Length: 351
Ligand SMILES: [Zn+2]
Image (tube, rainbow, N blue to C red; front, top):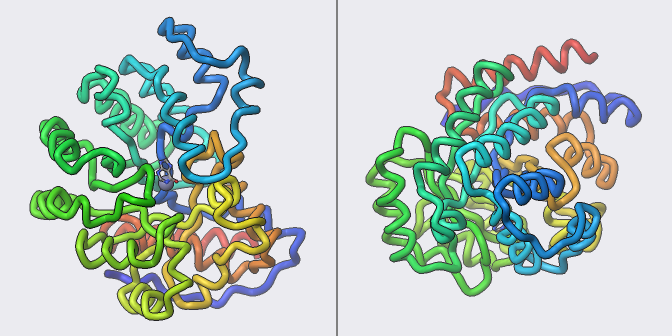
């Protein structure tokens, strides 16, 4: 892997830090596109498609977003996705996110999607793929955002179901760059999906998995050693295991950390106690991401500004997190260098 050059960044006053965080180019590596579905769009799509939803208003729905753990969120997240039926619905959802990403100076995004959430309801794989892919193509042309897709298997379902999903997706294999693993973590360890990940590896897909969000460090170990993933999504429980921290640092395995998600799902009691700084201090390739921004109260820049305000991270950390996002992305070495050059230019212009 190419490691972007290091850079020592001059300190800037705390009151100017939010502007720098917003202005710097960055990659988003952990965004569930179904988690970008805002309540307003849920209501609009419900009406367009004649789907009944058990909430009287947008305010009513938003009021239900009081989560105590991952599962309480997932129950509402899957219900929200039930309004997605047509190709245009998937396009509209992805386009709304991509416009928000562009506004946050996200120049590269690798978006998760959960096909089983849709095929289970009778939506064709092709419908999902067509809508999301068309939004990615338009994002490059009209927003200058380089957008790719990563297909996630739902870990609360069986490996057999994951294999069937992979089969359905293979006619569209040029439209997604990798596979991931999401949904209910506890009780569904990575090794449950050992064979389907081995197959995806043979097929040449990039591999990632959620691990160590709520689950123990053992799940991060098995994501690495059994599934052979290239990145860990979340991974914040890794600080509980010194040997694991060493492994992640030595192998430069990126962690796609999602601070506002961790706050909303009660992984940390408050943002001031988030361990992002400890991950960076441990030499890990940690990144900042939004996860499910419509549900967790913030897109990329809000994740950056709120976390920096709560934890006292500095301009040096800002540079490192953005550089890490490009290092951790699935672009080639020349593109990584070009992105880090853009990052350096943004810092020069800011000084
Ligand atoms: Zn996630």
